[in-house]
Length: 162
Image 1: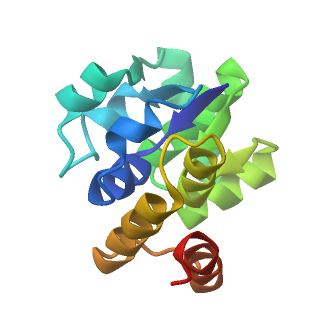
Image 2 (image 1 turned 60 degrees about the vertical axis):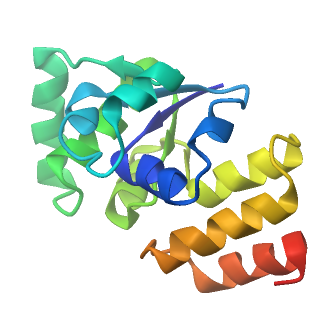
Image 3 (image 1 turned 180 degrees about the horizontal axis):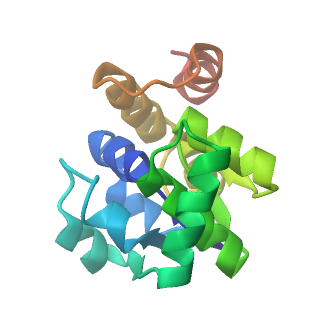
């Protein structure tokens, strides 16, 4: 499985101390170069690449598609829309926590998931213990991740009685 990510996924997983675990999944992680070099912020981009993140450059045509999409979907940033463009071009899944980008992906028929989906995969594939996933999820929320409260609480109850 190949997943195209935006910046907030890596920020959340960094805040959860689960970056290394995400790269143990049977997933090829890809991000557009403009995301990695422009928005990852608190996460060391070299570390992400060392862990296995593939960086995808965009062609001039793809950059033009971002502008076309931005006219149709003005809420996601052009940088976030680069994730949608790469996923569409390469027929991949988008993983994002950005609401406007999720809505744009849905409207464009692109399969989209969030960081909770990543945590679910980590637990299901036994890459991390449920208690570690719960601790990571709590850390994400404490550090400002805007995740759906009901979904968070359900996972905390499931993973550690939280």
